[in-house]
Image (cartoon, rainbow over all chains, first blue to last red; front, side, top):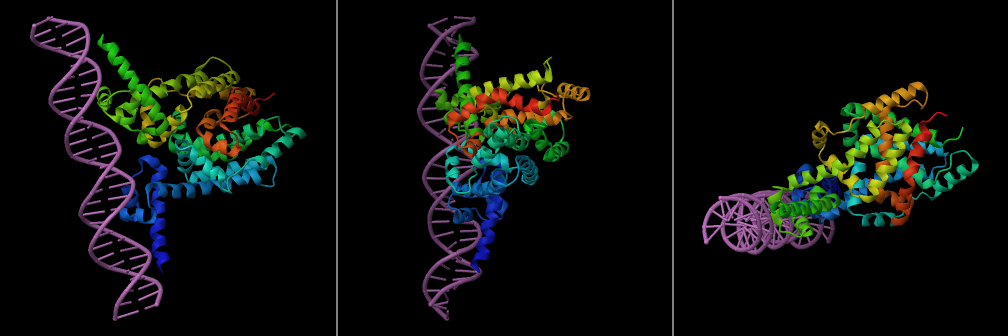
Length: 204
Length: 204
DNA sequence: ACATTTGTCAACCGTTTGGTTAAACTAAAT
DNA sequence: ATTTAGTTTAACCAAACGGTTGACAAATGT
């Protein structure tokens, strides 16, 4: 079956490209290096993915689609705000501990090429916080949580979960701990982050 | 005076390099482009800063030294924890609104080259949170603030202040607002962030 | 069995890149 | 007036880069 053969090579390329692109970024990545890591000839990259740009886009889409479901969790689940925050923080941190280069890769390339976001937003699966906003506004009105704009709360949730990984090299320096200790700090954040947020917004 | 001449050219190069490096990153930056933006010949770059690597390091150091003072503010000031958090958030956000590419540049290059941090930590002006930690531990013991590890609190402060800028392209998409509205959200955060943190940790 | 498509590779190509060189220009110092 | 040191330029270079070509092998279809 041709699909078997081509599938293995094609996915070997994608895996290798993922590794290189995520670690080095689009500009610093080398086609030869990707080919070496995939254990194939450089021509194969162009055979399966015409150009560096297209290979990159395939990697980016694949990476982004791994994160989108996590976000829909917090936005569209039929649970209380507090549960959403707890579940998302725990799930997201567990996920990123397994894919440490992913968040930085996405953020980085989005900053490098802002028009890219427009393409993503246009796609159907792109998360939208309107439902979350509605829920927050409602709970504020009910006096369950402190007055806060849903947008600001959302930005806070994202910041507290994502930045500790993106800023890890810097934070490790400031806090002055080794890699192992820092990883333990991240483990602790699976519950720490939600507690911190809920303490801030919850009215007794 | 020859120093005048060289000074203007040298600083013109540094300014141009700053702009290009911060927007594109080390790998994607081109020496020719920097020369064009500085309005001089490409050879001048090598005349004043031997290599791309050295020019980059000069830019990075310059950028980093713009942020270090801000951090020492929160770490070593002789003020209450609450004041530190308020002052830092307000100052930092004001600063970054004027230099939007800076945080992303630093975080990005630090991720690309983790050994770089070690060099920075070794320098005398590199911030260290030991004093902040002492203060937090004390206030926890006194029952002024909720029990929290100083490291976690520090990571939270950094995250809430820095990430909204680094993750701006992504967050703009999620929150679904235009650039102007997003900037207003950032303005609001000058007080919003500190309120959010203090609400979380302060015991009435 | 034969023809056609698909997959793979080594060698090659044109361009771009960081970096060099040597000469020209400037202006202060002798 | 000549030297000297610093500054600037155009032309050049080797290496690295993304991408192409053509030959060949392995499947696949008829």
